[in-house]
Image 1 (cartoon, rainbow, N blue to C red):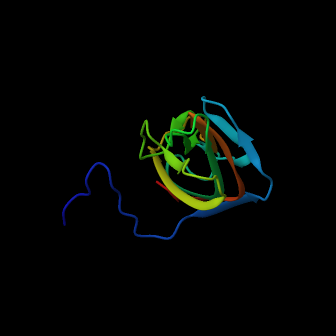
Image 2: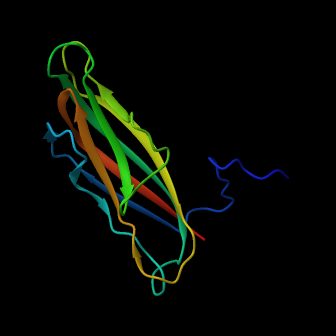
Image 3: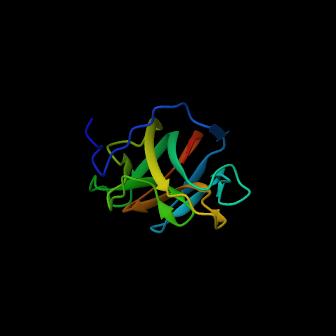
Length: 154
């Protein structure tokens, strides 16, 4: 059996825990900095006294998104990702295109998946998952979103 590539993983069991949170409220922003979607957070702890000392987490975020261009050049982008504590879930990119401004802005459904692995350690760590957005040459937001976190203890 070959070992998985560094940018892949294999899980042979069901998740230990599955968390879900959602909201139907609209959140819009014009920020060029990562801004948390209100309520799009799952409290996750690792270490002694918590469900596990290490874990592989898989996050799925789905939302209706809207992105409108600030200068009508068609290059406006609504970026989205999931942070686990201060660490971005993989794949990490400087180009997280969740929605792109095209023509007349319309709400449309989008989904992303991110993952992160924290090796076992007895030290207590807050690795809470938070969905964050930022805009590049645009304004926009999300509504009717759902965040699911699957926890695979190590």
